[in-house]
Length: 84
Image (cartoon, rainbow, N blue to C red; front, side, top):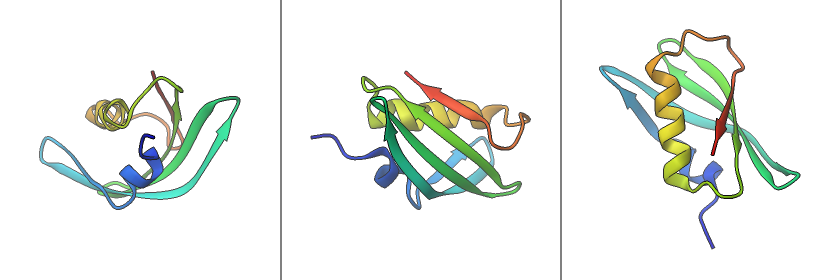
């Protein structure tokens, strides 16, 4: 059985370029087979995002999607990142 993405991300340090954030899981649930993980990314600046994770995605896919989003995080706070 795969490790839950919420556990993988909790307190994980995510770095993109010279910027760093610490992930804090604020909620997780499964709806219609999709795993939803709600994160606070603590750094400069802070963000709140939700990950909508496909049943076929693994933990590596989840971390890569979060890193991809952080490359250009100028989107609205509360974005939903879809992980396929």
